[in-house]
Image 1 (cartoon, rainbow, N blue to C red):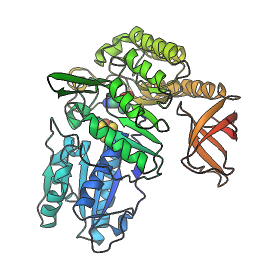
Image 2 (tube, rainbow, N blue to C red; image 1 turned 135 degrees about the vertical axis):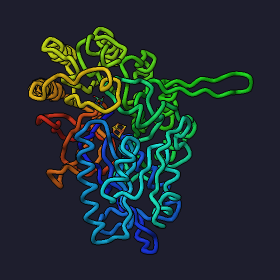
Image 3 (tube, rainbow, N blue to C red; image 1 turned 90 degrees about the horizontal axis):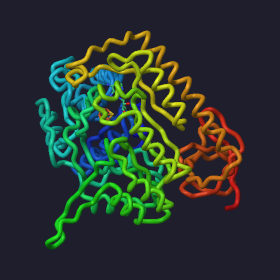
Length: 465
Ligand code: 5AD
Ligand code: SF4
C-alpha cells in the first residue's frame, strides 16, 4: 500500500458552512485505508446532519482516525490528543473522539486516561457514530469497538475530503487473515471480507461521472479478493483479476491502480489482466519485508526469497515496463548480519523503483511479541535501516535516470509546490513528473518527455503524442 503511516492527512475541506449544524473536524493518520475510512465517516455524519470543517478551532466535535502499526504512530496520536485537551480547556463543550486502529487496541486506556476522550469507535462501528455522538453530548462515554465479519460500508458513498477531483481511493475489502507475526492489523481491523463488486463498480462509475480520472482499489491484501453470487442455478465467482477487469471496463480513460498485493497471492492471471488493459497502471506495490527466507518464515509471510524473485520474473516478463515498489522491515527478531545482507542483495537484484522502509516495532499481543524476543539492539536496527535507505536512494535514482529521454503519458494532478507555472502528475509507473503548464488543465492526460530528474521527481515538458 502506498503507505504513509508517519504523515498526517489533515483534510482541507469545508464541505458546508451551514452554521446551524454541529461542525466536525477529522484528522487522519496511517494508511490509505484510513484516509478512505475518514471519507466514509464524513459521509455518515453529513447524512445525519453534521457539517465537516477543516478548522480545528471551529469544531464542535474533533475526531482523530488513528494508526497502530508502529509504536511511533501511536505516540504521535497521543501528542495530538494532549493538544485536543488544550482546545477542550478553552471550549469545554467540544467532544473528542478516537477512531480506527488505536480505538480498537487501546479502548480502556483512552477512556480512562486524562478525560479528554469522549468517544472511542473501532473501524467496523462507524455507522454507530451519530448515536454515540448523541450519547456523548448527553455526558455519557460513547464506545463501540465491535469487529464485524460482514461490514464493508458497501452502500456508503465516501465524501471525498482531500478533493483534487482527479484521483480517489475505493475500498474493495476490509480486514486481513494473513497473520504476519509482526502485524497488529488482523487484531485492529478484524477478519478479511470482500465488498460486493457491483457496489464497487457503481462507486467507480459515480466517480467517473463527477470527473475523476484515476481510482486506486484498496485492501490489505487485494489479491485475495473474492466474491460469490448465485446466478440462477450457477454459482458465479469473482476473483481480483475479474474485479480489476470490471473496473477497467467502466471507462477506458480512467486510470486504475491497486494496493496492496501479497507476494503469495499475486497470480499471473492478475498480471495478464494488467497487460491486457491499457488503463490499468503498470505499477505493483509488492511488500517483501525481508530478503532472508529464514526471517520470512519467522514473519509467517508464507513465501521464500526464491518465491518472491519468481513473482518479480513473472512481472518483468508479462509487463516489461512495470515499476515495482516494496515495504521492508529491518531488525526483526533474531535478524543477523547475514539476513540483513540478504535483504540488501535482494534489493539490488530486484532494483526496486521505490520502497517504504521501517525499523521493526514490537506490537503487543502479536505472535512475534508473544513468541519471539525483540533482540536486535536499537543501534543495530538504526544502522541497518540507514544502509537500506542509502541503497534504496541509489536504486530510486537509477530508476529515474532510466526514464530520462523517454516519453510518458501523464495525468495532471495539481500545481507543482515549487512553481505556479508548473504542474505535477504521475506516469503509469507511479513516478512524479513536473513540467511547465502551457495551456493545459488539472485532470487532463498529456504526453511528457523526461529531460532530467532530481532524487524525488522527473522533470520534463509536454510534447505532441
Ligand atoms: N514494525 C515495523 N513495520 C511494520 N509494518 C507492519 N507492521 C510493522 C511493525 N510491527 C510495515 C510492513 C507493512 C507496512 C504497512 O508496515 O512493512 O508492509
Ligand atoms: Fe491502517 Fe490500521 Fe494498519 Fe494503521 S494499523 S496502517 S490504520 S490498517
